[in-house]
Image (cartoon, rainbow, N blue to C red; front, side, top):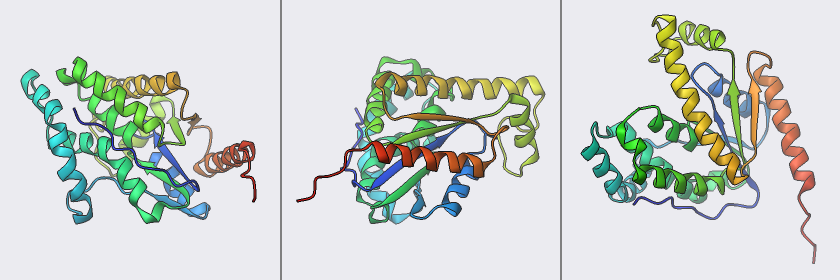
Length: 242
């Protein structure tokens, strides 16, 4: 069974993941946070074209074999993109811990582990209902709950989401479809996120912050997050000076 490789966190670093269905405004908020505040970095995701990422792929693929074999037996099997998500979910805590660039400040994950898990769930493949996959998913959620310092969940009314999806240049499976079909796709994605966020909430960590991007601008959300971070920092016990 592939297990998450959790590395030691730097005491001065906070890790935040932004999640939400397409059109919710994840990338826009990530860019806004990066532009408005110092010591913020948008973390890399797994790229097989990046040589520095291949050690994680090389370690992750063999560990993923039992899960991949289960998916092959149940059909349809996980494809290469989904396999990369499995490796990312299990191996990326080590990457974040070892990356010197993430030694301080705030690290923002756009399409991080919660997204990757949701992506596997909404694939609808039979393996995602198996006990093996569910046990693995629970282990990954527990591991990442110790790595993430917060999850920002962005929402918006369905009509707003569809308008944004159809107007932007990026492709998406819900783009250009009849409204009913598009809404069904968004509903399946929202259900995947809801299941995962419920499991994190049951663990009691990390805190989950929800914002409606039809009511608040990216700048307003960024300011609210800054205030929340400041409030959390003020509640932490100060280290005793010797």
